[in-house]
Length: 151
Image (cartoon, rainbow, N blue to C red; front, side):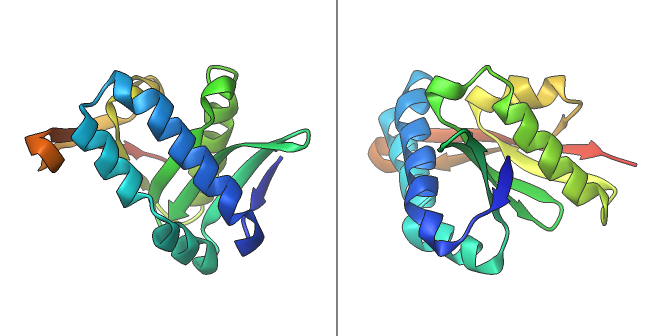
């Protein structure tokens, strides 16, 4: 079940995001980039999005397993706890997000991390931009901007 997040779920969202970044991202990115991602998805940004009513949680039985933020035609902060990955939860969150966006927009946009890029390519997203950010310790954070046209 996917629900709209409220302030009382803030800690669950933070845990999903920070646990996923801390577990998965070190396999793909240097330490400076991992630290950047963790700081980027901070409490203030998550709470601001919750207050805008654009954050959602996927609940399986009595546990929150994933989250996504939908900002107009952009899918942001889509994370699934590592122990629940490869079980269809990311697909469910993406399906939900795409359905919401299709109601008002003809194009979906997202920033894809290295771990998620293959997932989005399989779903018909194409690369439209590549960006690099220099982080702590001189490490580089690289990511793609991807889009998908919907009807």
